[in-house]
Image (cartoon, rainbow, N blue to C red; front, side, top):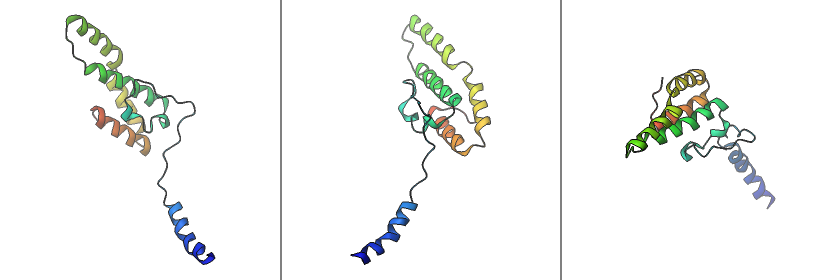
Length: 122
């Protein structure tokens, strides 16, 4: 029995060492806003606050951009919401991309996000 344990130990040690890298831990007290689409939850809390704020705002922008203006009142409602949540997002996006380009983890997250929501990569 002792021989069996000794033979298994190297395999167990190798298996333990082969664990995949773990993403950065979530920020303490991070709550993902309801506005953030579920597909953007992975890694969200490990991001800097300015990226989290942008993502929540951009996800709301995308929601309203996809709504149908079925009458004039709805069109005004959507225009107002898009002005509130979409205006300035392109400039913020370009600044964030430039700021985090040398940070591989955040740059990769932002690249995946841009592909998902259709933002151009500067």
